[in-house]
Amino acid sequence: MNAGEGTDVADGPGGPRQVGQVGQVGRVVLGALGVLVLGYGLFLLVSRRSFGDLVDAGLWLAGGVLVHDVLLSGLLIALGAAAARWLPGRWRGPLAGGLVVLGSLTLLAVPFLGGFGRANAPDNPTLLDRDYLAGWLLLVALTALGVLLARYRPRR
Amino acid sequence: MTDAGAPAPGRRRLASLRPPREEDFSPRLRSPAVAARVGVALGVCFGLAFLTGLVSHYSQLPDPPVPVPTSPSWGYRVTQGLHVATGIAAIPLLLVKLWTVLPRLFQAMPRGVGPLAVATAERVSVALLVASAIFMLVTGLMNSTQWYPWAFSFRSTHYAVAWVAVGAIVLHVAVKLPVIRTALGADLEDTSQDRVPKTSPTRGVDQEGLSRRGLLTATWTAAGLAVLATAGATVPWLRRVSVLGVRSGDGPQGVPINRTASAAEVDPAAVGEDYRLEVVHGEQSVTLSRADLEAMEQRTEALPIACVEGWSAQGTWSGVRVRDLLDLVGAPAGAAVVVDSLQQRGAFSSTRLPGNFADDPRTLLALGLSGEPLSLDHGYPARIIAPNRPGVLQTKWVHRLEVQA
Image (cartoon, rainbow over all chains, first blue to last red):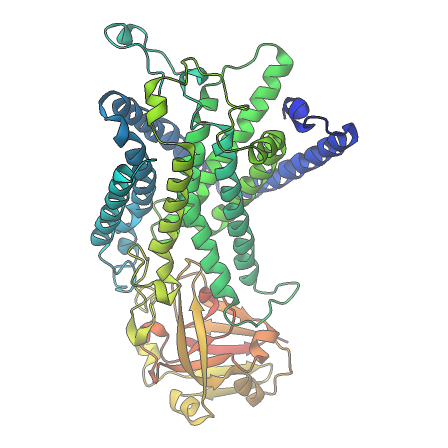
């Protein structure tokens, strides 16, 4: 990898050269260990699996990246641009913080709100047995409270 | 989450539409100072989830080379609760981490064969890191709710991709170590490692948006709330708080159920009056009805049922000590036992109870739970309950125990 990138930074100001070299060797060993473990994982992934299952796993691996990098990141960039244009300055920080909290909790809540797992176990009343919409609304209310507190907190 | 440096306003905007460039993004929040701090927390979560995941896979080996200890009885419960909790905490951490490094996606590729090859190799390793990390959290979360909209085996694929993710993380840390060390050694507001933005960071938007401190506070809050909102499925005193718990903890006889008798295709006739338990050791064997089992010495043990999907519950089980049953057929100490279930569907209809579990005095062939006869969905007429065992190996509807030679 780009091991050269760090050489200027690794030896901090005035750091002895030997320490830097030991650090470099340590980095290379660590990097090699990472490559080995990663390679073992790829071997596990492609071996002992039917071609169809491998394609399906590949679709889910690539699909996650695409959904994140295109849909989610695109949405966040659009939200950021909209906030920069229309939101009063004092609201931007608190609302951005609220988006971090509620956005990630909402993504986490998708399998619960959808209750998709129940189709897999229709006769099991002990699975997904809460009112998740009420739970999510509670999280929305908590986040809104946090945003308001951050917005109207006394400033120095 | 404000993106300064949006293209110039007005009609020129449409004409100037182009893919974003790295320098379009403000480095105020998207800085190594933030990425390194969130990255450390994320690395700790993935590390703990990986180790506890290995514990689970090892505990499920039928014949582990080094025996899994039977104590503490709550070992599997705690490690797997931690597995799911660290995975859940990693969801907000990963989202914020990826947000802070998004500009790298639009970094210009260098010229020249050598630098291009190095840059391509790094891109590939980061792509594997991002793909595997997202895959682990998405499939793990969906598995905890028993949602499987894919064809591949969850168990073996989640396991294989875990090695990819951890290897890619170790490689990433090795590559970024100088940046990480400098960032963690400097103040959060330090800008010495920041990219140079196209627009001046003194523009109004940048001054009024979320601060670095604010972003970190929001990130830790999100991770903490995510854990609190889900952990009640395994931590009893959090049950009321965990509004996104996969199970409320309720169920027949006060214990939830992972797989019902009908889902496991247990024949109702086979668990009725004609039910018999067979205990076999070579030529010797005994056949016992449920009444015969009830006539034997009854023991009571408080043991957890802890599922790979991350929920768990403590139960008070009563029944016959497995070792007492093995003594009926003269099984030697330390002998392993093959446990057969009446279930016709599912991967665990036949399991192996290693010798140290079969001999542990707490390991029961349970006939009752919470002072009542087992409900059918909890494994009536008889089930295995042993300390420190994965739930899938706590075999229900047991009809045969065969001592291995």
